Length: 150
View (cartoon, rainbow, N blue to C red):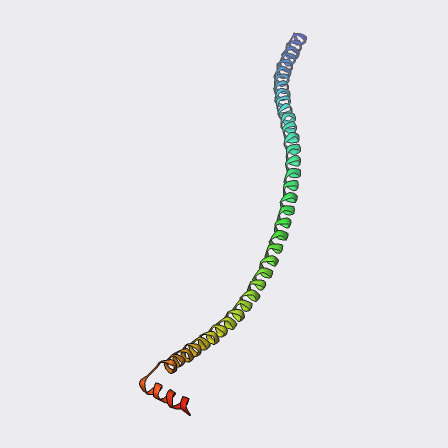
């Protein structure tokens, strides 16, 4: 009877172990499945990250190229602006010189016009005096006859 009870207890322990091992096997299987899913997701994310990283590198290169071309354009625009400023300054100086020369010429012309007006007034006055002297008057003809007879 003891042997039988020991055997029953051994079977119960064996069944308990078997059922416990099945429980643990199921838990382990579920954990493996979870791990497998997590590992798969990790690999997918890693792949995506690698693609994004490559895209970022390519975009970084594009940004560098664009920055360089913009810098070159800025430099050329600055050079053109400098040349335009130099040309503008030169033209302003030439314009100032031309204005000064024109002022001097205008003043000289004004003086010449003034002189011409004065000479015109003098000539008109002399003509008027000559006209007055050449007009025959009664007293003038007597004086002219008197002077002629002398």
